[in-house]
Length: 63
Image (cartoon, rainbow, N blue to C red; front, side, top):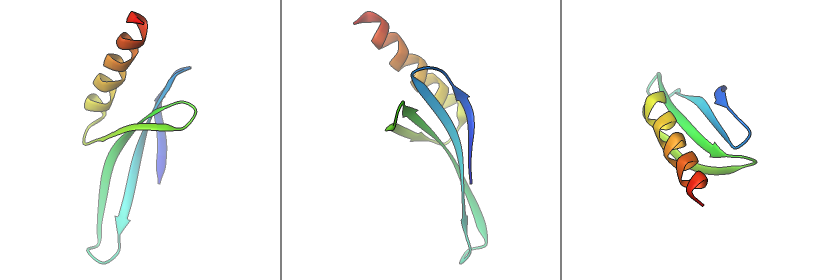
């Protein structure tokens, strides 16, 4: 299951849940995407994904 948590005109942070039936567990991670569809990374926490997005945004401002 995927849920968009934060987006703007350039980036999207999505919460992704993956259910593993064999271990009866759920893995959660946060995906940072540069729109329209370039994955920039996967993170354990929303805070890490948001920080990476802010760093990427500031590097774009410097260009």
